[in-house]
Image (cartoon, rainbow, N blue to C red):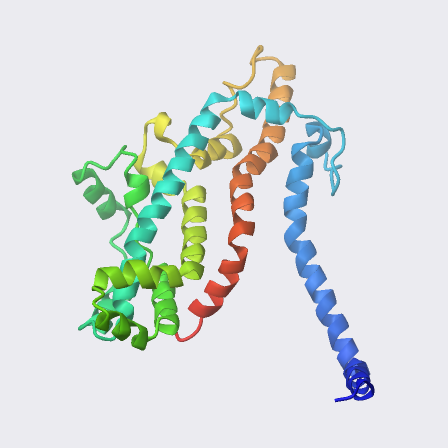
Length: 309
């Protein structure tokens, strides 16, 4: 093919009809609107966390911060229980994610094997739990009998298996681990355990990254189990302290002064407003930092797990 023909083909491809350009413009416009709607709350929270709480309360903060101040962050970092919650949440999220992966991946791989007798029946039993559960009271009684109430293990063991994650992982294994590869491994003397650890898992990096992100975010945002099963403040995750600040107005340990004076009450409201946005930023930073490293696996794993379901 000559250079003139190549130039002609590229020029032909560059010619787009009016309807095509209109469709592209509409698509770009809708995409820009979605991006703005998605990003604005995040930008507003960050701006409000650095702004004067008086301006935030009066509604004068729209996009950019005004009256820059770090009082909210100073109070957050001086609040010792926040760091206790941060430490507990890091432990729960890291250990819980490892437990989730150690339970979910072998289960999903077993259900994906065609030679596993009864896998369809077992899958149906597992899927049944997505529609019906034992209820809160029976679950609490079981946890109490297992001595897991007010025990940090409750934050890791309860919900260790997610049916949704298991189905996604099983679909990935079925679509990406060919049966011929397994048969070749067996012919080379590979056991089932060696096949799973040395061949399947290295090929399953995308779905492992997806499940890790799902589980880590779930543990990081979890507060209901702690609210029900934990009573020791030293075991609370970060989200419980966040809930106390946002809902229960437990600010008495953060301020000093005469509680009967109007000045004290006004100051307390201002500090609460600064801390409310600041602690949301502090609680969200680890997840925002983690996501870019898993993004390339996240998209691939989600697309593979969404087909042949």
